[in-house]
Image (cartoon, rainbow, N blue to C red; front, top):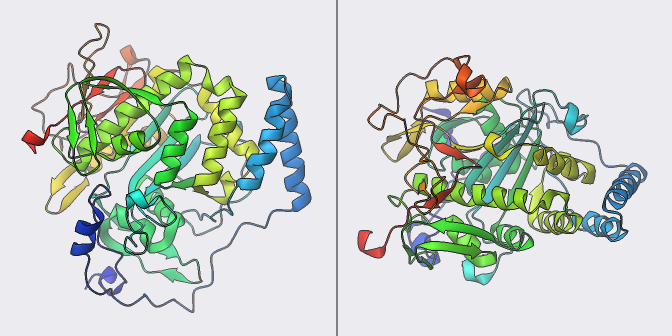
Length: 454
């Protein structure tokens, strides 16, 4: 018998875009018993509590630095405000079960920066428009993204993990003591409900072979606040998007989205591509690339006012790991991203193939991807954007990301070795076509889907 069968199961994995009533109707009438805590296993190490004096000195240093750079005292006052809103952090552990501590400065971090961003479907503390928080008790990581920045800050990759991908889940620390049992095969979006943010970080770390010292969990309100802080994001829609589940109806053309509209655009799947979660990922990448183009063109990362608004939105609406509650760390990561050229920022989907009930990893392609990231090598995509995105049809300079790719190729084909670099691509590792996505400089549009096609 598989070890995970005796373990407490999380709430039923439902779509975050389903009406509350439909989700509740399919939820099992009763849950299994809570897993027993292993009394013989000691608690995992925790990060040391912050010293008030040391924390105060960090805040003062960060305040002075930003005040000097911006040439004004407003940014300094703003940082004090952000510091007061930061929630208590979550202790992360590495693959050896040791507490993540003694982190070096971002610029000197060995192997680059690995930051996990988790989007939770929990309704707890959210606007009533998203459903009854008491009935909607799920806490699934329906969005899981790993941000990798190379050590020399020359390139960055954002990997999206399909929520319905079956993966092993390692033994995770129980916040109340002991550990939860490991599981041999479970959907990745259940990891948050088993052991919280630390468990999702461990799961992704084991899957990718990369240590993850930084992590953040964001709920619906956080996405709304961040998009509003940017003043909205302008996206291109190639075909009309019609989705009754998220109440998203967008005509073909450009739309500037913020707040609730931006959130629903990111949540829609029925209204894009083939209606699958994989289409939703490529649609989200359209939004992310448009956002990065906007941030770069407007020099957002050099504007202390906007940086403050983003930091405030993050502090109020995100659960951060202990390692991210430091103001200087948050600022350093933002400044690191500022150095990366748009052409060297890639948004990719974890390579996967369909199986009954979900998808499973394509191991050879995943190995090529994460060996390249682990070695801080730039990557080159050879696959398409995915079912939810197309090249911008009104932009003569836009190049179809799928051009030159073998559309009939077997997505499970053996990937080239991780050191198979293309001299014409500046030494970048050429990934197999099963790794879909786009770079931040590519102009793409959402492939809409009307009610008639659903």
